[in-house]
Length: 393
Image: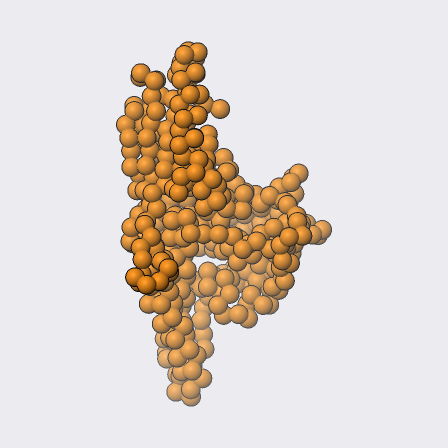
């Protein structure tokens, strides 16, 4: 539904005619295109937008690309100004959202938003293979950071078994710190590449048919072993009956673990963390509540913005500021919603939903046990929770 500043029949007729014209022009465009109202709510999407950005189908989907400050953007297009909004990017060409408002005299009708993704460039003359600059960035991050980090891990593991390091506590402590820094690099590399995929339309779900309740339970059991070392009580409650639905286990684990990590990281005395999973109709509702530092009211609108980080001690760039951005992208890509409520010095609650849908067309997910997560040193539990682990050899 479109909110207009007039109820004139002539304007309504112009609105319909203009929308019909624009949708015909952009329905088969090679670029994702959407129509939005004066609140940046989506009125229509073309075929490419539906395929490349599934989260545009959920309420508020366009806001995934627009950090705080959307009010200024909406104000400009209401005044009839064309606006190019540059989506935050860690490096390389940025995705640009190009807004073109349609007006009837001084009345705002709607705005066309076209996603201008980084161009695809040929890699070699005599081949059909082509790679976007975003792909190049992602591959560079993997080869220049991820691969060397794995080599360092191997060397550290070998050194930790040698007698000089086994017998010297200081050397052992030093190796433990190297491991922690390697995990930090690995996590940052994974987060940056995933966020880059999302913001450039390169992400896709690898859906599997899974028991969501069992999936959450196993992750919580693995996390409980780590959270216990921090002396933070952690309680979780999930349905005993299976919740069979379609999920991307790898991505959903990243979303859940980032929420739990924040609950542990921004802690204070008497902190408690609780997770509950319930079912309401065709939705699974997962709530994570803590009694940590909480978030100042002025910062809450920005918590899902890419690269925005907040530290209770006031330290700038305390973290990469990617975790909650990934949470929002992952949940909306699944067709769910996510919301955060926080009060400074009281605590934070994050609630997200996952739609319950079942079909036999997708492969069955073989559940990883809590022990599997803990024993695999490169599991998402170990990588994401590495800040909380005391690595000793």
